[in-house]
Image (cartoon, rainbow, N blue to C red):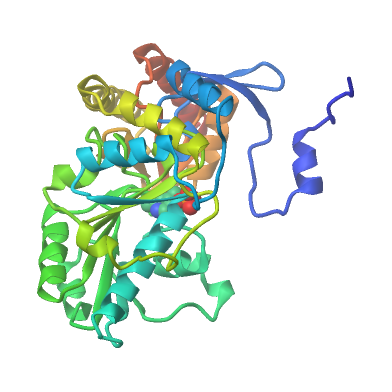
Length: 404
Ligand SMILES: *Cc1c(COP(=O)(O)O)cnc(C)c1O
Protein backbone atom coordinates (compact mmCIF):
# COMPACT_ATOMS: atom_id res chain seq x y z
CA UNK A 1 0.00 0.00 0.00
CA UNK A 2 1.11 3.55 -0.70
CA UNK A 3 2.26 5.55 2.32
CA UNK A 4 -0.10 8.39 3.28
CA UNK A 5 1.26 11.88 2.61
CA UNK A 6 3.13 13.18 5.66
CA UNK A 7 1.39 16.25 7.07
CA UNK A 8 2.24 18.70 9.82
CA UNK A 9 0.79 22.03 10.94
CA UNK A 10 3.27 23.68 8.55
CA UNK A 11 1.48 21.94 5.66
CA UNK A 12 -1.53 24.14 6.38
CA UNK A 13 0.48 27.29 5.77
CA UNK A 14 2.06 25.75 2.68
CA UNK A 15 -1.07 24.46 0.98
CA UNK A 16 -4.22 26.08 2.31
CA UNK A 17 -5.90 29.35 1.39
CA UNK A 18 -5.07 31.30 4.53
CA UNK A 19 -8.59 32.23 5.71
CA UNK A 20 -8.03 30.40 8.99
CA UNK A 21 -5.28 30.42 11.60
CA UNK A 22 -5.71 26.99 13.19
CA UNK A 23 -4.05 25.91 16.42
CA UNK A 24 -0.47 24.69 16.14
CA UNK A 25 -1.31 20.99 16.56
CA UNK A 26 -3.35 18.51 14.52
CA UNK A 27 -6.13 16.47 16.12
CA UNK A 28 -6.48 12.96 14.80
CA UNK A 29 -9.04 11.16 16.93
CA UNK A 30 -11.98 11.84 19.23
CA UNK A 31 -14.18 9.91 21.61
CA UNK A 32 -16.97 11.51 23.60
CA UNK A 33 -15.58 14.81 24.85
CA UNK A 34 -11.92 13.94 24.47
CA UNK A 35 -9.70 14.41 21.44
CA UNK A 36 -6.08 13.47 20.79
CA UNK A 37 -3.44 15.10 18.62
CA UNK A 38 -0.75 13.60 16.38
CA UNK A 39 1.58 13.29 19.36
CA UNK A 40 -1.04 11.47 21.44
CA UNK A 41 -1.67 14.41 23.78
CA UNK A 42 -5.24 14.45 25.11
CA UNK A 43 -7.56 17.44 25.24
CA UNK A 44 -10.97 17.90 26.85
CA UNK A 45 -13.23 19.33 24.17
CA UNK A 46 -15.23 22.31 25.44
CA UNK A 47 -15.73 23.66 21.89
CA UNK A 48 -17.52 20.75 20.25
CA UNK A 49 -16.42 21.80 16.78
CA UNK A 50 -18.03 25.25 17.32
CA UNK A 51 -21.35 24.12 18.81
CA UNK A 52 -21.61 21.28 16.30
CA UNK A 53 -20.65 18.00 17.98
CA UNK A 54 -23.66 17.99 20.29
CA UNK A 55 -23.22 14.31 21.07
CA UNK A 56 -19.44 14.44 21.25
CA UNK A 57 -17.11 12.53 18.97
CA UNK A 58 -17.78 9.08 17.53
CA UNK A 59 -21.15 8.69 19.26
CA UNK A 60 -22.09 5.03 18.68
CA UNK A 61 -25.71 5.69 17.63
CA UNK A 62 -24.73 8.40 15.16
CA UNK A 63 -21.81 6.40 13.81
CA UNK A 64 -24.05 3.37 13.33
CA UNK A 65 -26.60 5.47 11.40
CA UNK A 66 -23.83 6.80 9.18
CA UNK A 67 -22.31 3.39 8.51
CA UNK A 68 -25.67 1.76 7.85
CA UNK A 69 -26.71 4.45 5.37
CA UNK A 70 -23.24 4.49 3.78
CA UNK A 71 -23.75 0.90 2.71
CA UNK A 72 -27.18 1.64 1.25
CA UNK A 73 -27.53 4.94 -0.59
CA UNK A 74 -25.54 8.17 -0.42
CA UNK A 75 -27.02 10.59 -2.88
CA UNK A 76 -29.66 10.95 -5.53
CA UNK A 77 -30.16 14.67 -6.21
CA UNK A 78 -33.53 16.25 -5.65
CA UNK A 79 -35.18 14.75 -8.72
CA UNK A 80 -35.72 11.74 -6.44
CA UNK A 81 -36.76 11.92 -2.83
CA UNK A 82 -35.59 9.43 -0.22
CA UNK A 83 -36.69 7.80 3.01
CA UNK A 84 -34.25 9.38 5.52
CA UNK A 85 -35.07 12.94 4.39
CA UNK A 86 -38.80 12.39 4.76
CA UNK A 87 -38.39 10.81 8.17
CA UNK A 88 -36.21 13.70 9.37
CA UNK A 89 -38.71 16.24 8.05
CA UNK A 90 -41.49 14.53 9.99
CA UNK A 91 -39.43 14.50 13.20
CA UNK A 92 -38.69 18.24 12.91
CA UNK A 93 -42.29 19.12 12.04
CA UNK A 94 -43.75 17.10 14.92
CA UNK A 95 -41.37 18.72 17.41
CA UNK A 96 -41.75 22.36 16.32
CA UNK A 97 -44.18 25.01 15.03
CA UNK A 98 -43.22 24.13 11.47
CA UNK A 99 -45.30 22.43 8.77
CA UNK A 100 -42.63 22.26 6.08
CA UNK A 101 -38.86 21.87 5.85
CA UNK A 102 -36.22 22.80 3.27
CA UNK A 103 -32.88 21.03 3.63
CA UNK A 104 -29.48 22.39 2.67
CA UNK A 105 -25.87 21.96 3.77
CA UNK A 106 -25.00 24.72 6.22
CA UNK A 107 -26.30 27.47 8.43
CA UNK A 108 -25.54 30.14 5.86
CA UNK A 109 -27.53 28.27 3.24
CA UNK A 110 -30.49 27.91 5.60
CA UNK A 111 -30.46 31.67 6.22
CA UNK A 112 -29.99 32.37 2.52
CA UNK A 113 -33.15 30.35 1.84
CA UNK A 114 -35.03 32.18 4.59
CA UNK A 115 -34.11 35.63 3.28
CA UNK A 116 -34.92 34.67 -0.32
CA UNK A 117 -38.27 33.29 0.83
CA UNK A 118 -39.12 36.56 2.58
CA UNK A 119 -38.25 38.71 -0.45
CA UNK A 120 -40.20 36.51 -2.85
CA UNK A 121 -43.20 36.28 -0.54
CA UNK A 122 -43.59 40.07 -0.54
CA UNK A 123 -43.16 40.22 -4.30
CA UNK A 124 -45.72 37.45 -4.83
CA UNK A 125 -48.17 39.58 -2.90
CA UNK A 126 -47.66 42.25 -5.54
CA UNK A 127 -45.59 44.51 -3.34
CA UNK A 128 -42.33 45.08 -5.17
CA UNK A 129 -41.18 47.75 -2.72
CA UNK A 130 -41.60 45.47 0.29
CA UNK A 131 -38.05 44.20 0.17
CA UNK A 132 -36.33 45.65 3.22
CA UNK A 133 -34.61 43.37 5.72
CA UNK A 134 -33.97 44.38 9.31
CA UNK A 135 -31.07 42.74 11.11
CA UNK A 136 -28.98 43.55 14.18
CA UNK A 137 -25.56 44.87 15.03
CA UNK A 138 -23.07 42.17 15.88
CA UNK A 139 -25.27 39.42 14.46
CA UNK A 140 -23.78 36.48 12.60
CA UNK A 141 -25.74 34.69 9.89
CA UNK A 142 -23.07 33.04 7.72
CA UNK A 143 -20.55 33.92 5.01
CA UNK A 144 -22.41 33.95 1.71
CA UNK A 145 -22.67 37.46 0.32
CA UNK A 146 -26.33 37.81 1.33
CA UNK A 147 -25.91 36.35 4.83
CA UNK A 148 -22.66 38.17 5.54
CA UNK A 149 -24.47 41.39 4.59
CA UNK A 150 -27.34 40.51 6.94
CA UNK A 151 -24.76 39.87 9.65
CA UNK A 152 -23.97 42.88 11.77
CA UNK A 153 -20.18 42.77 11.74
CA UNK A 154 -18.96 45.02 8.92
CA UNK A 155 -15.43 43.61 9.21
CA UNK A 156 -16.76 40.41 7.57
CA UNK A 157 -18.55 42.13 4.68
CA UNK A 158 -16.85 45.43 3.89
CA UNK A 159 -14.22 44.00 1.54
CA UNK A 160 -16.79 42.38 -0.74
CA UNK A 161 -18.81 45.39 -1.88
CA UNK A 162 -21.06 46.01 -3.67
CA UNK A 163 -23.20 44.16 -1.13
CA UNK A 164 -26.84 43.14 -1.56
CA UNK A 165 -28.90 46.19 -0.64
CA UNK A 166 -32.01 46.75 1.40
CA UNK A 167 -30.60 45.59 4.72
CA UNK A 168 -30.74 47.85 7.81
CA UNK A 169 -29.03 47.13 11.12
CA UNK A 170 -30.09 48.39 14.51
CA UNK A 171 -28.71 47.69 18.01
CA UNK A 172 -29.53 44.25 19.42
CA UNK A 173 -32.06 44.29 22.28
CA UNK A 174 -33.13 47.85 21.44
CA UNK A 175 -36.79 47.50 20.57
CA UNK A 176 -37.37 51.23 20.12
CA UNK A 177 -34.60 51.40 17.51
CA UNK A 178 -36.06 48.39 15.69
CA UNK A 179 -39.54 49.91 15.78
CA UNK A 180 -38.18 52.98 14.00
CA UNK A 181 -37.05 51.00 10.97
CA UNK A 182 -39.62 48.19 10.75
CA UNK A 183 -42.46 49.37 8.53
CA UNK A 184 -44.64 48.23 5.63
CA UNK A 185 -41.57 48.04 3.37
CA UNK A 186 -40.01 45.44 5.68
CA UNK A 187 -40.21 41.90 4.30
CA UNK A 188 -38.15 40.20 7.02
CA UNK A 189 -36.55 40.58 10.42
CA UNK A 190 -33.73 38.15 11.16
CA UNK A 191 -32.45 37.62 14.70
CA UNK A 192 -30.53 35.13 16.84
CA UNK A 193 -32.28 34.34 20.15
CA UNK A 194 -28.78 34.32 21.65
CA UNK A 195 -26.12 36.05 19.58
CA UNK A 196 -23.40 33.40 19.43
CA UNK A 197 -20.42 34.63 17.44
CA UNK A 198 -21.24 38.17 18.51
CA UNK A 199 -20.35 37.46 22.13
CA UNK A 200 -22.97 35.06 23.59
CA UNK A 201 -25.57 37.77 24.17
CA UNK A 202 -29.08 36.54 25.00
CA UNK A 203 -32.01 38.47 23.59
CA UNK A 204 -34.37 40.02 26.16
CA UNK A 205 -37.74 38.25 26.05
CA UNK A 206 -39.46 41.63 25.57
CA UNK A 207 -37.23 42.32 22.56
CA UNK A 208 -38.22 39.12 20.73
CA UNK A 209 -41.85 39.58 21.76
CA UNK A 210 -41.75 43.13 20.43
CA UNK A 211 -40.22 42.01 17.14
CA UNK A 212 -43.01 39.44 16.82
CA UNK A 213 -45.61 42.18 17.25
CA UNK A 214 -43.88 44.53 14.81
CA UNK A 215 -43.67 41.75 12.20
CA UNK A 216 -47.36 40.98 12.65
CA UNK A 217 -48.30 44.64 12.35
CA UNK A 218 -46.28 45.12 9.15
CA UNK A 219 -46.72 41.67 7.62
CA UNK A 220 -43.00 40.89 7.78
CA UNK A 221 -41.47 37.44 8.15
CA UNK A 222 -39.82 36.87 11.52
CA UNK A 223 -36.77 34.65 11.05
CA UNK A 224 -35.07 33.11 14.07
CA UNK A 225 -31.54 32.06 13.27
CA UNK A 226 -31.17 29.09 15.61
CA UNK A 227 -28.13 27.70 13.86
CA UNK A 228 -26.16 27.95 17.11
CA UNK A 229 -28.94 27.86 19.73
CA UNK A 230 -30.66 24.97 18.00
CA UNK A 231 -31.07 21.31 18.71
CA UNK A 232 -30.83 21.21 22.45
CA UNK A 233 -28.00 23.65 23.06
CA UNK A 234 -30.03 25.82 25.45
CA UNK A 235 -31.73 22.91 27.19
CA UNK A 236 -34.78 23.07 24.93
CA UNK A 237 -34.88 21.62 21.44
CA UNK A 238 -35.02 25.19 20.10
CA UNK A 239 -34.66 28.40 22.09
CA UNK A 240 -37.86 29.97 20.73
CA UNK A 241 -39.93 27.75 23.03
CA UNK A 242 -38.09 29.16 26.06
CA UNK A 243 -38.93 32.66 24.92
CA UNK A 244 -42.52 31.78 24.12
CA UNK A 245 -42.17 33.60 20.81
CA UNK A 246 -42.91 31.63 17.65
CA UNK A 247 -41.09 32.73 14.48
CA UNK A 248 -42.37 32.31 10.92
CA UNK A 249 -39.10 30.77 9.81
CA UNK A 250 -36.44 28.99 11.87
CA UNK A 251 -33.03 28.05 10.59
CA UNK A 252 -31.00 25.22 12.05
CA UNK A 253 -27.67 23.57 11.24
CA UNK A 254 -24.58 22.99 13.45
CA UNK A 255 -25.85 20.44 16.04
CA UNK A 256 -28.39 19.03 13.56
CA UNK A 257 -25.69 16.94 11.90
CA UNK A 258 -23.29 16.61 14.83
CA UNK A 259 -20.46 17.08 12.34
CA UNK A 260 -22.07 15.86 9.15
CA UNK A 261 -22.80 18.98 7.08
CA UNK A 262 -26.53 19.71 6.98
CA UNK A 263 -28.80 22.70 7.45
CA UNK A 264 -32.54 23.22 7.38
CA UNK A 265 -35.10 25.96 7.11
CA UNK A 266 -38.34 25.29 8.96
CA UNK A 267 -41.49 27.22 8.14
CA UNK A 268 -45.27 27.21 7.92
CA UNK A 269 -47.49 25.84 5.16
CA UNK A 270 -48.46 29.32 4.09
CA UNK A 271 -44.91 30.61 3.72
CA UNK A 272 -43.60 27.40 2.19
CA UNK A 273 -45.86 27.96 -0.82
CA UNK A 274 -43.61 30.88 -1.78
CA UNK A 275 -40.82 28.56 -2.81
CA UNK A 276 -42.57 26.64 -5.58
CA UNK A 277 -40.93 24.16 -7.93
CA UNK A 278 -37.71 25.49 -9.39
CA UNK A 279 -37.55 28.71 -7.36
CA UNK A 280 -34.73 27.58 -5.08
CA UNK A 281 -32.60 24.48 -4.59
CA UNK A 282 -29.31 22.76 -3.91
CA UNK A 283 -27.63 19.62 -5.22
CA UNK A 284 -26.85 17.97 -1.90
CA UNK A 285 -29.65 19.35 0.30
CA UNK A 286 -31.52 16.55 2.03
CA UNK A 287 -29.32 13.80 0.74
CA UNK A 288 -29.87 10.39 2.36
CA UNK A 289 -26.47 10.21 4.04
CA UNK A 290 -26.79 13.58 5.83
CA UNK A 291 -30.42 13.11 6.77
CA UNK A 292 -29.92 9.57 8.09
CA UNK A 293 -27.23 10.96 10.40
CA UNK A 294 -29.37 13.94 11.42
CA UNK A 295 -32.32 11.66 12.12
CA UNK A 296 -30.23 9.66 14.58
CA UNK A 297 -28.91 12.89 16.10
CA UNK A 298 -32.40 14.32 16.47
CA UNK A 299 -33.77 11.22 18.17
CA UNK A 300 -30.81 11.10 20.55
CA UNK A 301 -31.04 14.79 21.52
CA UNK A 302 -34.81 15.20 21.71
CA UNK A 303 -35.21 13.26 24.94
CA UNK A 304 -35.98 14.59 28.43
CA UNK A 305 -32.72 13.08 29.75
CA UNK A 306 -30.49 14.91 27.29
CA UNK A 307 -32.37 18.21 27.48
CA UNK A 308 -32.57 18.15 31.29
CA UNK A 309 -28.94 17.10 31.32
CA UNK A 310 -28.00 20.29 29.45
CA UNK A 311 -29.47 22.41 32.25
CA UNK A 312 -27.60 20.35 34.84
CA UNK A 313 -24.36 20.74 32.90
CA UNK A 314 -24.96 24.48 32.63
CA UNK A 315 -24.85 24.59 36.41
CA UNK A 316 -21.67 22.50 36.58
CA UNK A 317 -19.98 24.98 34.24
CA UNK A 318 -21.32 27.99 36.12
CA UNK A 319 -20.18 26.65 39.48
CA UNK A 320 -16.73 25.78 38.14
CA UNK A 321 -16.24 29.03 36.26
CA UNK A 322 -17.42 31.12 39.21
CA UNK A 323 -14.93 29.33 41.41
CA UNK A 324 -12.11 30.06 38.96
CA UNK A 325 -13.27 33.67 38.81
CA UNK A 326 -13.18 33.98 42.61
CA UNK A 327 -9.55 32.96 42.64
CA UNK A 328 -8.54 34.84 39.51
CA UNK A 329 -11.07 37.60 38.80
CA UNK A 330 -10.83 37.89 35.02
CA UNK A 331 -14.52 37.66 34.06
CA UNK A 332 -16.91 40.56 34.53
CA UNK A 333 -19.88 38.41 33.50
CA UNK A 334 -20.65 34.76 32.81
CA UNK A 335 -23.75 34.47 30.64
CA UNK A 336 -25.65 32.46 28.06
CA UNK A 337 -28.00 29.53 28.25
CA UNK A 338 -27.57 25.79 28.56
CA UNK A 339 -24.27 24.80 27.01
CA UNK A 340 -23.74 28.05 25.13
CA UNK A 341 -21.75 29.95 27.72
CA UNK A 342 -19.80 33.17 27.30
CA UNK A 343 -17.33 34.64 29.78
CA UNK A 344 -16.82 38.37 29.32
CA UNK A 345 -13.28 39.42 30.21
CA UNK A 346 -12.74 42.39 32.50
CA UNK A 347 -11.14 45.60 31.18
CA UNK A 348 -7.75 44.38 32.43
CA UNK A 349 -7.91 41.33 30.18
CA UNK A 350 -9.68 42.94 27.21
CA UNK A 351 -8.52 41.49 23.90
CA UNK A 352 -6.97 38.43 25.51
CA UNK A 353 -9.62 35.79 24.76
CA UNK A 354 -7.55 34.20 21.97
CA UNK A 355 -4.44 34.11 24.15
CA UNK A 356 -6.41 32.41 26.92
CA UNK A 357 -7.66 29.70 24.57
CA UNK A 358 -4.10 29.15 23.34
CA UNK A 359 -2.89 28.66 26.90
CA UNK A 360 -5.90 26.38 27.47
CA UNK A 361 -4.73 24.27 24.53
CA UNK A 362 -1.31 23.95 26.13
CA UNK A 363 -3.00 22.79 29.34
CA UNK A 364 -5.08 20.25 27.39
CA UNK A 365 -8.49 21.81 26.93
CA UNK A 366 -10.19 23.25 23.87
CA UNK A 367 -12.28 26.40 24.24
CA UNK A 368 -13.61 29.00 21.85
CA UNK A 369 -13.74 32.74 21.66
CA UNK A 370 -16.71 34.94 20.70
CA UNK A 371 -14.92 38.11 19.70
CA UNK A 372 -11.69 39.35 21.32
CA UNK A 373 -13.17 39.78 24.82
CA UNK A 374 -15.28 36.67 25.37
CA UNK A 375 -14.25 33.06 26.05
CA UNK A 376 -16.99 30.73 24.84
CA UNK A 377 -17.85 27.15 25.79
CA UNK A 378 -20.06 24.98 23.56
CA UNK A 379 -19.27 21.41 24.59
CA UNK A 380 -21.12 18.20 23.85
CA UNK A 381 -24.62 18.19 25.35
CA UNK A 382 -23.80 14.88 27.03
CA UNK A 383 -20.30 15.67 28.30
CA UNK A 384 -19.61 13.53 31.39
CA UNK A 385 -19.21 15.27 34.75
CA UNK A 386 -15.68 13.94 35.05
CA UNK A 387 -14.69 15.64 31.77
CA UNK A 388 -16.28 18.91 32.89
CA UNK A 389 -14.26 18.79 36.13
CA UNK A 390 -11.00 17.81 34.47
CA UNK A 391 -11.47 20.35 31.65
CA UNK A 392 -12.20 23.15 34.10
CA UNK A 393 -9.16 22.19 36.18
CA UNK A 394 -7.02 22.46 33.05
CA UNK A 395 -8.73 25.73 32.11
CA UNK A 396 -8.02 27.09 35.61
CA UNK A 397 -4.31 26.43 35.04
CA UNK A 398 -4.47 28.47 31.83
CA UNK A 399 -6.22 31.31 33.67
CA UNK A 400 -3.59 31.17 36.41
CA UNK A 401 -0.90 31.59 33.77
CA UNK A 402 -2.55 34.61 32.13
CA UNK A 403 -2.89 36.17 35.60
CA UNK A 404 0.71 35.63 36.64
C1 LIG B 1 -22.43 29.25 12.58
C2 LIG B 1 -23.60 30.15 12.35
C3 LIG B 1 -24.08 30.42 11.05
C4 LIG B 1 -23.37 29.93 9.82
O1 LIG B 1 -23.40 28.56 9.69
P1 LIG B 1 -22.43 27.84 8.62
O2 LIG B 1 -22.79 26.40 8.73
O3 LIG B 1 -21.03 28.17 9.04
O4 LIG B 1 -22.76 28.42 7.29
C5 LIG B 1 -25.22 31.18 10.93
N1 LIG B 1 -25.85 31.67 12.01
C6 LIG B 1 -25.42 31.44 13.26
C7 LIG B 1 -26.19 31.99 14.41
C8 LIG B 1 -24.27 30.67 13.48
O5 LIG B 1 -23.82 30.48 14.72
